[in-house]
Image 1 (cartoon, rainbow, N blue to C red):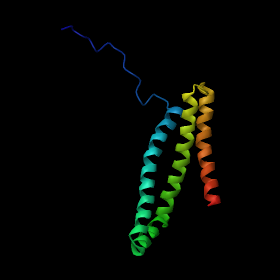
Image 2: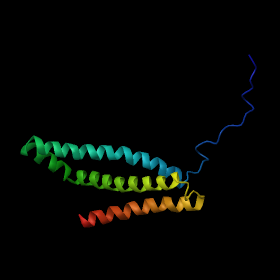
Image 3: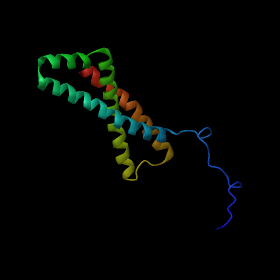
Image 4: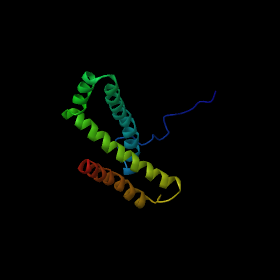
Amino acid sequence: MADVNRGNRPLSPHLTIYRPQLTSISSILTRITGNALIAGALLVVWWLLAAAVGPEYFAFADAAIRSVPGDIVMLCSLWALWYHFLAGIRHLIWDNAMMLEIRTAERLGWAVVIGSFVLTGLTVAVV
């Protein structure tokens, strides 16, 4: 077997010196919001199943969803839905090899972040 000297090879950059970019953070956030949407969907399914079970259990589930923590969870789920939707559109644009320049990609990332908050606010205002 060959004698390999591993001590003289350069190390990869470490996380302490790597500066995260908006595109990498938004990619991670897209995955997180996708998983969070599963939790929000399970709450909605629980609420619908409680309505099918009976009025007493529905009153319990409805009170839980309409409580302050339930409102916060549903508001965060609404934001996650809009963020995930807009990030999906961004990926469809990138899949067509459009807007891939660094400056344009960063602007598109900010559009997703700002647009998700604006659409969440509009949805809450309308409903």
